[in-house]
Structure formats: structure tokens, C-alpha cells
Amino acid sequence: MKERLVKLISTKGLTASKFADEIGVQRSGISHIISGRNQPSYDFIVKVMEKFTDLNIEWLLTGNGPMYKQQIIQKDITDVSSDMKNKQFDLFSEQLNSENKHKEIIKNNSKVTNVNLVKNVVLLFDNGTFKLFEQGRQD
Image (cartoon, rainbow, N blue to C red; front, side, top):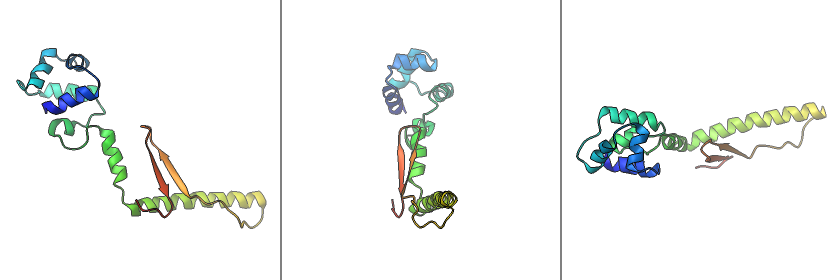
């Protein structure tokens, strides 16, 4: 666990002393954990969890999974089967296309022969990433 703690401190751009101050423990406590002299206590783990809510605590404790929770969510989104993605795209584009046809019919009050159909859908996430869904594309 000490290697993962060192990685967390480094990733957050902190020194061991600043990290100790951030989570509210004695600086010597961090030093002892990093040197391997002491194992982290339950209270230490809880303080890390409370301060760094984006941290995947399973990663810190066992090394399993990604370092941050957001990476877990992103992985879950990526792991959606291509069948499911296509069904979601088809349902979404069908709804949009239906709304477009309805609007055109009302607008012109006549039979619609030329309607714009949805080709792509882009989902923008708050972490700056995006996911592109294209009709008929298998990812």
C-alpha cells in the first residue's frame, strides 16, 4: 500500500508533509507509513477517504481497479455492449426523427418527403470527455 500512497501523493502534486496536513495527521505518521515502519491505521484510511472523495479506496487498499472513481464510471460506460449502444442510439434517433417529422408536418401542413434524420449523437461528460454514437457503427 505504501507504493500506492506515494503515487497518490505525487499525483495530487503534494509533498508528504503537505499530504499529512491535508488529511489532518502528523507528518511523522506519513513518513513512517512511506518508509514501511508502520501500516496505515483505520483512522488514517478514513481521513484519506474523507479528503479525497474521488479516490477509489479499493485501489488504495489492494491495488485493484483504477485509482479514481471516475475511471470506474468511464470504464462501465465503455463496457456497454455494442448491441446496447446501438439500441440506445436507435431509440434516441427514432425519437428525434419522429419529433422532426411532427414539426415539419405541422409547419407545412402537408406530407413530408424530405426530413433530416439523426446520424450521430455526442454525449459530453463533465470531466471533459465525450462519447460518439454513430448509426450502424459497432464499437
